[in-house]
Length: 176
Image (cartoon, rainbow, N blue to C red; front, top):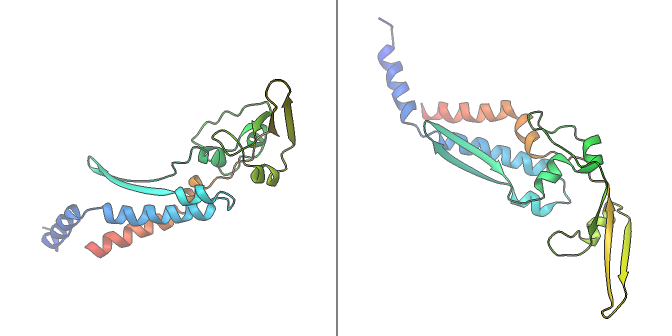
């Protein structure tokens, strides 16, 4: 017979009834704030899009920190030759393939185009192509060799594992 066995089993029963969602929600919110802090300031829309989700999957409670911005992955991992040269801090568990050639990006405000202010900020050379003919048409393009990686999601968790575990431990202790 173990002294205190009945009390210990009662505590375990309470813990099994406890919804881990609260602890995971608190922990993933901490990761979200860390990701926002790591996100380069120039990407205000990206920073504001960082969100969380907590759901039960079978016997597990899973917390997810994510962004729905398509370009978030390019900021995280970098692009082109510059990204390949400068990608310190990205997840070692992700195999990234970088294009080896520079490219031209159309300037403008439409999908697939780069904003003039951002292109100027990155000192991207400018080329304006003029087409003569029935319609006078010109289009400006920006030359790039990519961008270095600016990891913000991976470091938000990897650099704060102990903090995340402490948050979960404290939440569980409160419930016991």
